Amino acid sequence: KPQNERQRMPVVPQGIERDDFMKALAELRKQLGAEHVEINDKPLRDGWYMEHPNTHDMMTILDEEEFVASAIVYPASTKEVQQIVQWANKHHIPIFPISMGRNLGYGGAAPRVRGSVTLDLGKRMNKILDVSAEDYTCLVEPGVSFYALYEALKQRGLEEHMWIDTPDLGGGSVIGNTVDRGVGYTPYGDHWACHSGLEVVLPTGEVIRTGMGALPGNNTWQAFPYGFGPYSDGIFSQSNFGIVTKMGMTLMPNPGGYESFMYTFPNEEDLSSLIDIIRPLRISNILENVAQVRHVTQAIAARGLPRSTFYPDGAGTIPSSIIHAAAAQTPVGDHTWAYYGMSYGPPHIRAHKLALVDAEFRRIPGARRIDPATLPPDEYFWARDRVARGVPDIHELRWVNWRPNGAHVAFSPVSPIRGRDAMRLFALGKRLHERYGIDFFPAFCVGLREMHLIVEIVFDRADGESKRAALACLRDLVDDAAREGYGEYRTHLVLMDQVAGTYGWNDGALMKFNERLKDALDPNGILAPGRCGIWPRRYRGRGWEM
Ligand code: ADP
Image (cartoon, rainbow, N blue to C red; front, side):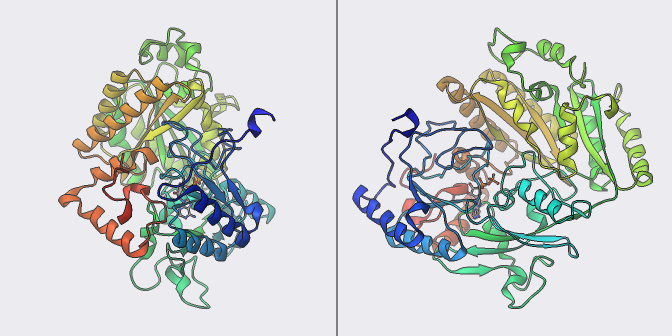
C-alpha cells in the first residue's frame, strides 16, 4: 500500500479500554451511518490551509501525536449533534467540536485532550439558512465559511447591496471564528459584537436558542441580540459550555464607496506618537476599521520569500540592517512602520475624513503617504484592501514561508490605544525574541478603545529546536506581559492553561466561577475538556494542565 494508506494505531481517550471504545464507535456508526464516523488511523498529514486535516493541528508546536483525535464524526443536523452528545455522556468519552478547524495559529482542528472524538460540524452542516436583504442579517450553520457567505451574496445578486466581514484568512468558519472572538477589518470587525442569536446544544444534550430565538414565532432573532433575561451568549464563546449549531450574523450595508490608504513612518520610536494620534481618530470613527500598524519585518515576510533569501547565515534574530536593506524593495522603503486603513462612503465624505487623517499622521516627521496607484497588483496592500471591504483572501498566509515547514502561533495581548503601552509591549516582545533568536513580527490592530498586538511567531515544525524555542518564547511573553498587567484576547490550545491562569484576580475567582458553570452544565465533563483552561471536575488536579 502507498505510504499514506498505511495504518497508524489510533489513540483511545484515557480511561477507556480500546475494546470498549471500538464498541462505542460501532454504536455511533449505527446511529449516524458508518461513513460518518471515521477512526483516525491513517498517518497524520498536514496538508495546507485549503486542504487542512481535521485530525490534529497542522501547525503543531508540540509533537503531532500530542493533541490528536481518536475519531472524527460528521453530524448532519442539530438532532445528530444531540445524539452524539448523549452517546459521549453514556460512555464518558471526551468530544471536541470544530466548525471547520482552520483556526490557524490557535490550534487548528486539534482537540485539547488527546484521543477526544472530534465533531466536525462543518462538513455536513454547511447551509446558509437565511439572508435578509431588508434587515442586513443572515443565519448560518457551522460549515459556512467567509468565502461561502461571500459567494452566496453574489449568487443572490446582493454583493452590491451588503458586505460581509472577513478575518485575514477567509477560509475559516463564520461561527468558528466568531465563537473564538476573532476579528475582521471592516467597521463590522468585532465579530462577536456583530452576531445576533445562537442555537446551542448543551453538554447534556438539550438544545436552546438564545435572545429572541427563545420566543416561538419571533421574527427578531437576528435583529435584537438580547431577548429577555440574562444574556447567555457570552458563556458560549471561548468556552466549553455548548456546541453552537446556528448563529445569526449582521451584515454591513454597502457604504457607497471605499478607499484604502497606506502611510509609513521612519523610526521604531515613532510608534508611540503614532498610536497616540490614532486613538482619538479611531474612537471617534474617523478611522473606521480595525486598522493595522505593521512592522517592516512582516512587510518583507509578506512577500512570501524564505528568510534564507535575505539572511543565508541564519543565526539568531535577523539583523535590522538586513531588514532595512530588504525593505528597500517594498513600499515601506527605508521606513519602519506601515499603517493600512480604509475610508468608507462616497467621495466627498471620504475626502473630509482622509484630510483629517493626513493632517494628523503628518505630525510625525518624515511620515509618507503611499500612493496606491504606484503599487503593483500583487502587493500586500491590495490584500489588505480586499479584506477591508469584506472580500475573503489568503494572501496573509505568505509570511508562513519565512521558515521551512513554516508554522505559526500567535501571542496576542490587549492594551489601551496608548503610545506608552505600545512601546512597553514592543520592547517586551523585542527583548524576548532576541533572547530566543526569533524574528519579531509585531502588528498592532486597533479595535475601538483597545488594540490587540498580534505577534506571530513563525517556526519550523520539522525542527524540534525551532519548536522548543518558539514555545519557550511564547511562555515568557505571556508571563512577562501579565506581570506588566497585559492579558491575551485569545490563545493557542497549548497556552490556554497559562493564559487562563493570568486572569487570576481574587484567588482565581473567575476560574472558580467558570468551573462551577462547567460542573453544572457538563456533569460528566465530556465537552472539550480543558478548552480555555476550563477543566471539568473529573480532570481537575490530575496533571492535565500544561
Ligand atoms: P475556523 O475554521 O473558523 O478557524 P474552528 O472550527 O477551528 O474555526 O473553530 C475554532 C475553535 O472554536 C474550535 O477549536 C472550537 O474549540 C471552537 N468552536 C468552533 N466551532 C464551534 C461550535 N460550533 N460550537 C462550539 N465551539 C466551537
